[in-house]
Length: 205
Image (cartoon, rainbow, N blue to C red; front, side, top):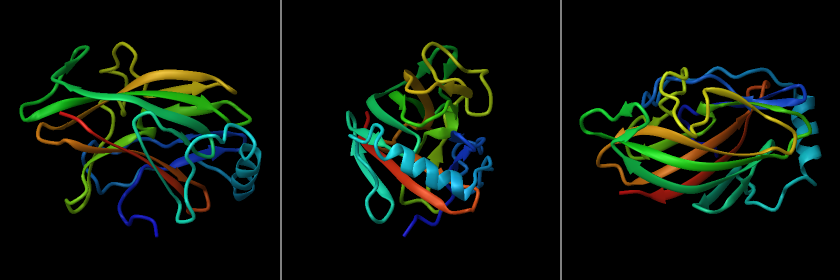
């Protein structure tokens, strides 16, 4: 059964895929609007991607895929791999607030869909405390806009061309004491049904 807490929503638009806009980082209880997709598109997507990519970790019968750093995760639209994760107090022009630190996650993407994908920095979010109620999560620091986009960071909105491979960095502000982290990507479709959830677990200092 899917987790009953607010998730970011991944969508497709006709022959396009991508995710919706972002909620405030760490709010944990505000839903994010999805873009539009049709049930027919969902079925076409699943069929068209069944023979494309496909050598990564896919969701189990319950709709979850679990991996670690270095594992390729294969969802309905693209493959992604978390290459590394580290923490720092600053990244580019952004400095973590008192009692916080920055989580810097290096991710490689490859489009396995049959069209270009509109993508968003908020496609990937992190949970830093599963035991809180609601669950505590954070969006990238530039999820709302590109004011704090630096270096190799994914922009707040970007595009992934057919079969394109892209490497980038997602940066999150999390509590200084947080160590066990889950990075997540969710699928969500216009018919208001969840697709699969992809989780990558790791520990940082």
